[in-house]
Length: 151
Image (cartoon, rainbow, N blue to C red; front, side, top):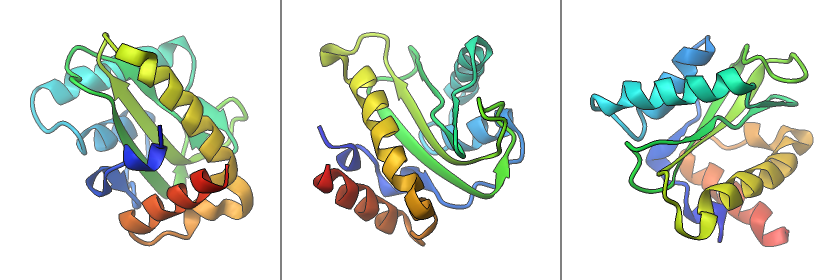
């Protein structure tokens, strides 16, 4: 499984404008849901955040959850130049977001595999802040592909 093949250009926000956790989640969710289910999905993600922040440190957060409103695994990538307070474990602002949602039933456990893959890719994206270079969604996907092909 390749992460780059799961990321769609329309699900990459290279200029996240939200300044608060809830608003970031809402902005990212809007890439995949623009109906009444979007607020339900945001609520699910916020409940997951109450268990412990998905801000993993070094400027990265991987908000994730399973929801009945998801019919397949979906990924949204967000980047904030200003950074967002996200209750990260290192108390630093988050600049890179990988939102992952999946249905409750997940044949092959693709959700957990994807979560692990994102964590590995983020380590590479953080080197020399490589995630800052892409100017378009397509360039971001190409960077992820390049990283994956080297691993």
